[in-house]
Image (cartoon, rainbow, N blue to C red):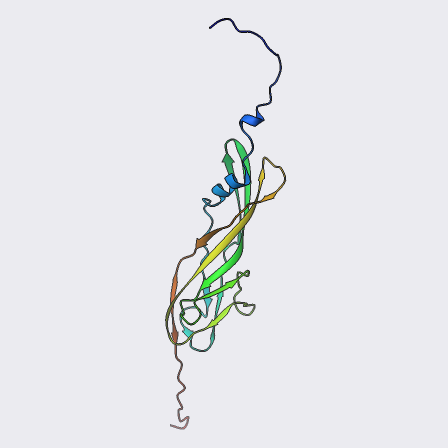
Length: 168
C-alpha cells in the first residue's frame, strides 16, 4: 500500500476484456427465443373425404426479428422458417417435409390423401437466422432450432353414393 503512481494518461481500450458475442454464443440465445409455434391448417375445414386431398398450410408469419442484449451488446436476430415438417397422423405417410409453408385453395401446394378415420396433424418448423451486433454486418447463425405447433384432430369420412328415384 502506498501512493498512486501515474504510469500513463489517456484512454485505454478494454475491448479485449469484453469481446463481441461469438456466433456460438448468439446461437445459444437463438435457441431460447420465443419463436412462434406455427399451427397446421387444413382444408376442407372440419372433416375431409377419403381419397380426396386434404390441403395443408400455415398462415402464421414465417419470419421474426428479435433484439437481445448479450453482455451489453445489442444483437439483432432475424429468424426465418426454412423447413416445414407436416406430421399427417397417417401411418402410411407420417410426414411431409417441405421448404414451403403451403397455401390454401386454389393456390395449394401441400396435400395428402387419407383413408377414412380420425387423424391428428401438426407442424414442426425448423428455423435458421442471421444476426448483427451493434448495427454491424449480418452473419449467419451456425445452427438451427425447431418449434412444434399445436395438434389438430380431424376426421376423414367415406362418402357413399346413394341412388334415388327422382319420380317418387
